[in-house]
Length: 135
Ligand SMILES: CC(C)(COP(=O)(O)OP(=O)(O)OC[C@H]1O[C@@H](n2cnc3c(N)ncnc32)[C@H](O)[C@@H]1OP(=O)(O)O)[C@@H](O)C(=O)NCCC(=O)NCCS
Image (cartoon, rainbow, N blue to C red; front, top):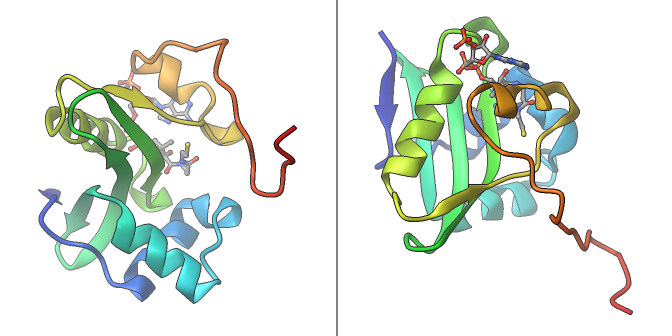
């Protein structure tokens, strides 16, 4: 039985361990305590999945609860993948802000996941990454 919670934030170490166990940790600054703590503290829509005491999934998003929800991280522990947890985390994230579009950047490993569960590719998405010059 997986329990879903949107009323709590996992502790820093708990979250770090999950990010590692899902492989998302390779692409997030999880070893920079201040930065990773800020990512957890300042996200305003966080849904977590629990197998007993074990944190097995997270959807970490920023939402205005009206127009746009940016789903910054979606991670499910490798041992718990392909059981519908990722889809349920997204469903609950969306249910918290039903009028808002969900926007995200897919990791290479999840490139085929999002179209499979109904997301549309947006060819006009643009990024200014950390360090990129604003011309
Ligand atoms: C991508 C991820 C979040 C998916 O979570 P999950 O709980 O395993 O996925 P679900 O069980 O909800 O899968 C729902 C459907 O998508 C399919 N699916 C799962 N992972 C997939 C993938 N990588 N590519 C294509 N389809 C995938 C499932 O088979 C299932 O299909 P079905 O309903 O037809 O049976 C999870 O694999 C993960 O954490 N990966 C590593 C971190 C990562 O890349 N995160 C994404 C950052 S953008």
